[in-house]
Image (cartoon, rainbow, N blue to C red; front, side, top):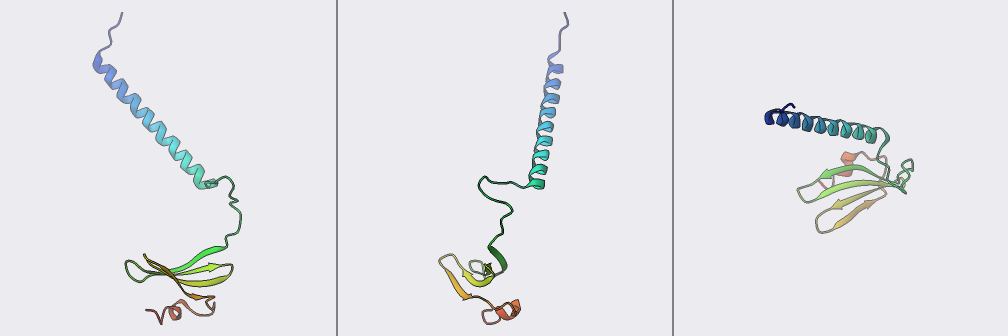
Amino acid sequence: MTVVEPEALSWVRILLAFAVVFALLVGLGFLLKFIKERGLVMPGIDPKATRRLQLVETLALDVRRRLVIVRCDGDEHLLLLGPDQDIVVETRLNENQSSSTRFKSIA
């Protein structure tokens, strides 16, 4: 009968643990690649549906306030977002104006 030394068993355990961790990392890599290629689809949500809401531009005024241009159904709205309240500054912005003239009176 062969006697296995305890030190040899500890090295086998270490190598087995490394193999398990490596296999888990490879599996996680394949899972993330699958999600990246196909996307994470939630049940009941159509991923090919057109979006009605779009964030066009944002400007940080200070640490607490932010100006945001949001497009909804083709109309652009200028919002002032803050910690206490959100204000609609202007609705249906003219598409011909550049962003520098939009913020000229505020900045």
